[in-house]
Image (tube, rainbow, N blue to C red; front, side):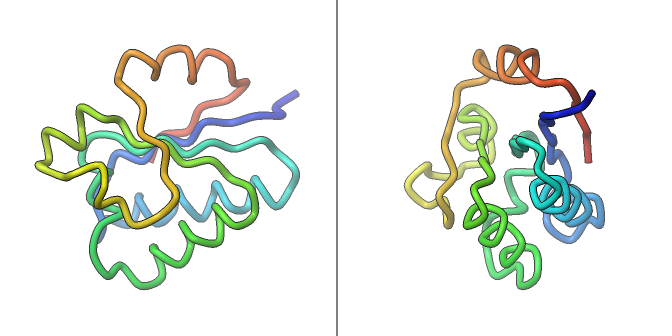
Length: 110
């Protein structure tokens, strides 16, 4: 039985998959699953700037108890400062990604 899920957001803002990933995460959270969003690669850009509906979804997801992590090395590669993250997003090193993914029962990639 699936009771937890890690959703990997790898697409930047403006790409439909980034939006779909956050929407799916919020829907699973509302259904009672333990959901973690992991923002990595180009997905880092999905949390910066005035993203309207996408930003609103991240905020709502976090308000409902969802967890959002960003990969430190991807932030650095994108030239983004950890202090500039707009939401309550935890930053983890790439070395913590495998254990995070391994402890869940399902993984979705957007």
